[in-house]
Amino acid sequence: MDDSLENLQNCFKQLRLTETAIELPNLFRKAEQESWTYRELVQEMVQFELKKREEKSIEKRMKWAKFPYFKTMKEFNLSDQTSISRRQLDQLKEMNWLEQQFNLILLGPPGVGKTHMAIGLGIEAIQKGFQVTFVTMGELINLLKTSEFTRKSQLQINRIRSSDLVIIDDLMYMAMNQREANLFFHLINHLYERSSIILTSNKSPDQWGELLGDEGISTAILDRLLHRVEVIHMNDDSYRMKHRESMFENEGVQN
Image (cartoon, rainbow, N blue to C red; front, side):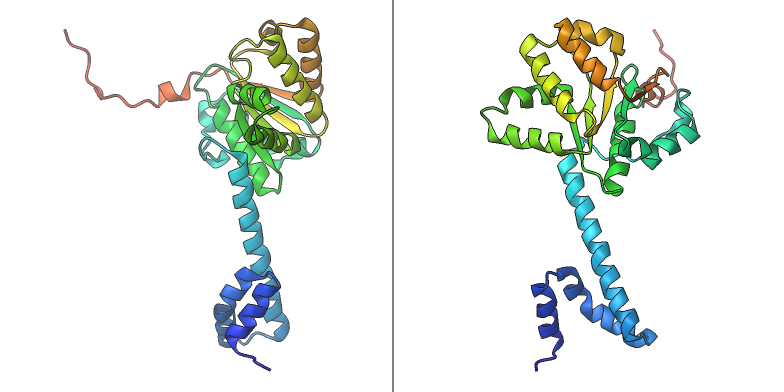
């Protein structure tokens, strides 16, 4: 019987315990230094493998989410917002609303942190084991229109439909024609009570009907989106304007 370390590592790899196989020399060294029992050694190996698998799973879900940038809730400056309290923010981070298939609508002008909050909550959801997809409204409409004849679009739409949380950024930034509104309705209808949706928009829901065109479709969409929803009005001054950099520093304008 070959009991060499290399053979043992190969056995672990065959059992698909690749991360543990690579770490074995360090684990054995630490076991000798700290006089671990057999049970302690096995426990360390199992915990190490589980930790690495979870890290890879999070990495995979992060890639799948397609966030435009990485912004966590820790980076969200609550002092720039009067529309939400620390307690409310902590409640959102607990993700109970996601488990109950509630939607979240973030309203306000550009630059107040809507997308940052949406991405931050998406990252929190991923770290808690949920599947998340981020898409802008413009991208979503293009995917819906091309999914019938483009495999890449079809795969992305399937990912959206199977996500626990779908983040749609810049909802209703432009008017839809009847076909686009119909495609959007079918997606919302599929997600209804299967997934949670975070929507960001600079237009309030009572204005969405004008942009959807068809009154029947707009009513059906709004009924599903607003059935179980929390609306946060982020109407403070633009964060980007308050924290902008100036090439003139503090110098006044001189004629």
